[in-house]
Length: 180
Image (cartoon, rainbow, N blue to C red; front, side, top):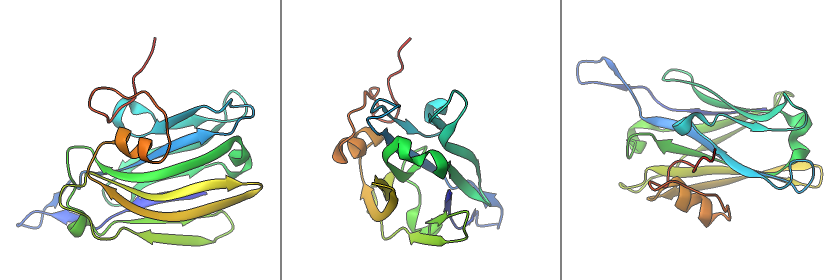
């Protein structure tokens, strides 16, 4: 399955392309089985771009490269999805508040079977650097997708805590504390 954040291209007054400052992120929480209830975040900040799964080389969640024309995609290995309890996908500004109204961002979820779900981001407050767009929950053997569209004028740490994640964040609240 792919989960892709797309947005309208921005241009300068003279018509030249300009960067959007919009990025895709994901909070994940494993089940209590083989992954031991671990949790984490995937985002370009700190280069955290994949989450472990079953087997030494398997990645259940992997964040793809970002492109102004094509957006940014989260790749989900549905065969290993039972490893997880839930994951939440969010859009954020890497350098402050993105111009949400101009971007007209949307999240496109596509299954290998061809099924598709599109979630359009709604109206954002002027000070919101982050939007929790959708949540994915593993319920028995089913994947339940819920539209959140929750703009939060705070940091990733505060948004994570709001949804029940207990992670150790750095002083800015945007990246995890690394050990080692």
